[in-house]
Image 1 (cartoon, helix red, strand yellow):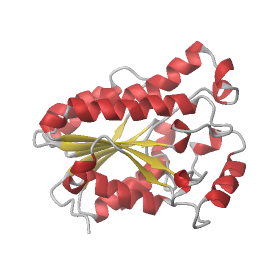
Image 2 (spheres, helix red, strand yellow; image 1 turned 180 degrees about the vertical axis):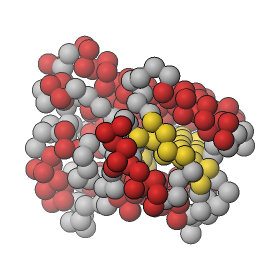
Image 3 (cartoon, rainbow, N blue to C red; image 1 turned 90 degrees about the vertical axis):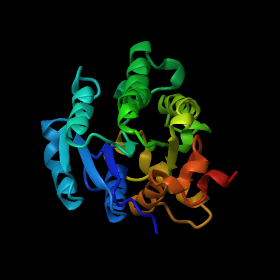
Image 4 (cartoon, rainbow, N blue to C red; image 1 turned 180 degrees about the horizontal axis):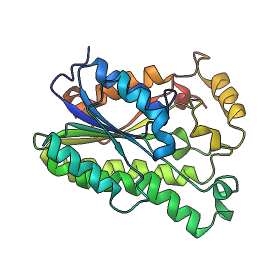
Length: 254
C-alpha cells in the first residue's frame, strides 16, 4: 500500500472524469494525499469540478500555460495556502490539429514550437516553480507515450515532442538529485480520452495495441493512477530519471 498521508500534490491536466490525470488524482487521494487541481478555462471548469469534489481538492485553479502569468499564479497560490508541495503531476499536451494530422516532415515551425512549449517546456516551467516549494524533496511526474521511443502510425508530431519530454525528465532528475527531488516519465498505454481523440484513426490504434499486448487488455486510468501514486511516494526514489511504463507490457513486444 502506498502511503501519501501528509503529502500535498498538484495535478495539472484533468479534463474530465475519463482523463488519465483524473485516474491519478483519485489514486493520490486514496493514498491519503491532499490535492490541488487545475482546469484549462471556464468551459472546462464544469467537467473538472466534479473530479475536484470527488477527490476533496483543497484548491481548484485555472491554468492555461499559454496565458501569461496563469501558471505562476497557481504556484503563488499553493505557496501562500500551503507553503510546500510534495509532488506534481504534469499531464498536458497540445499540438495544432493541422500539424498533428500531417507527417512530421510537413509540420510547420509554428505548430512544432507550440507543441513543444505546451507539451514539454511547460514541464520545465512547472519544475522551476515547484522547486522552492519542495523543501524536503519531492516527486515530479509527467505523462508520456510509447510513440516517444518508436514510430507509431498517426502519432506524428507528438512523437518527437514526447521524446523531448522524456529527455527533459532525465536531465531534471540529474539536476535536482542533490535536493531530493525525483523526476519520472509515466509512459501510459493508449486510453480513450478527449485529448487522444485528436489523434487521427485513434480507434484503429487502440485495436492494434490491444492485439499486440500480451494480456490482450488495454490499461485503464485506475491502473495508471496507482502507478502514479507509487511514483509520487519516496519508495520510488531509486527509480528517478526513469521512463516507467503502464501499458500491460505493450512496449515489450516486437
